[in-house]
Length: 90
Image (cartoon, rainbow, N blue to C red; front, top):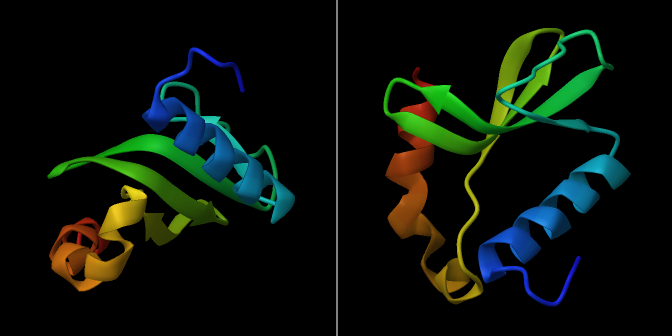
């Protein structure tokens, strides 16, 4: 992390690190290697409704979605459920 990073980039670096520590292979949607490990966390994965911040893949199948939000949104997560739900039905 560098001092001149945007808040969004700092958050993504933090999320990437946490996913890596949990055993996920973090990858960019531009270059996905489904054979890189047991599970991939793919950044900016394109869906029919737009890019999801992260899609979690196990055995080449989507098993979860992470939609990153600002810290102040933590108290209003239910307001964002429909966005994540829409990714899940794709």
